[in-house]
Image (cartoon, rainbow, N blue to C red; front, side):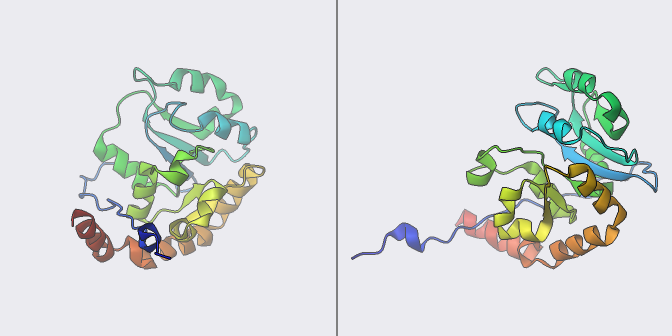
Length: 209
């Protein structure tokens, strides 16, 4: 019986996670605020924004801020509808109504405490796709909050917390008030060899060959 050649293939991945040094801008982050960035333009077809709102029926911690880091009012944007749905959560969300420059974008990312890809149950990202939020988190060693299915993969075990859909407000409160949880996860990301320049360089060259 001959071996199937596919059985001998080891899946590899290359992450483009090294960015240029963008000019520093004055970006004020209050010391008591906890920032959760959701990168990308605000479109319902791209991310599970409405599912997120359903999980946040109440969020008493006003210092917890979701930063929706992308233009919400472009031709295909759903920003106007989304803002109309916020209600008592309005103070917990920062929404951009215009283009966000690369410099401003990366400044916000580097100051956020948590990155949330907000992908919902879309199977594409477990089978054949990748979210740019993953690369940003890996690049800056910022922990993510992801759907539990992603935790089956080693890369996310080192870099993320599993989203608790039933108790999200409490989970966010716990992460905001226990900075050591984030610090330990960030250290795990820095120590993970796969996210190093050396290993990603090798992966890139292997892909070219």
